[in-house]
Length: 242
Ligand code: ADP
Ligand code: MG
Image (cartoon, rainbow, N blue to C red; front, top):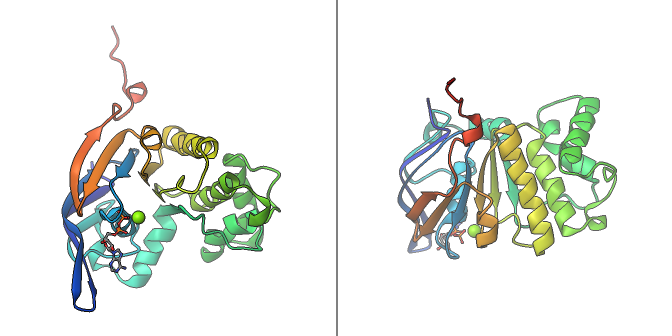
């Protein structure tokens, strides 16, 4: 079976004036459909660069990245946008909600780009908000919601298109520990109950502990890569009859 993500010898070099920054340096990585992976590493180690590349927001300078068996390197701008809209949800540290716009309208946005009817947009956005525990808050503006609730709206917006891959770059970085815990419970349930593949960047060990695999990045390379939980989960393995 094809792995969801296959990176082979990926390099990302940024040129700023005369200076070249090698943000990723020959990184290879495979992630299976249904995994929950935490990426850790100090500031500047290349975590966001890797996430942007995995999310088709950016292209590697060199190397091969396949998503669902499709080589992303050869695709045009609009093809990349199509993959993002069809397959990938993003959650960021700073929520990135549109101000003075209701929770429902924020969650609707990706569906607007799909050209869905307004009625379907609203119904699906309301269902996504309910999945993250925000039923009844549809009409609230971001300023009327706590940080944890705003991040839940952002997760609903990421989920509304039913992506197979959810990328979360330090989603709990701006949250208190109780809200962080709630966000991680939601992500864990999405992975466990719906089989959504999740890749999460975090600085915190107790946040990484929700994942089933921990990858540490240093200077644009993988320093360590280990499963912390059995994959696939044993509950899905058929027991042979006695
Ligand atoms: P992390 O998310 O682990 O903190 P980043 O991926 O943001 O690290 O950055 C990795 C390296 O690449 C850093 O040295 C950073 O300064 C550099 N970098 C990131 N984005 C850019 C950019 N757009 N232009 C130039 N350099 C960049
Ligand atoms: Mg970063």
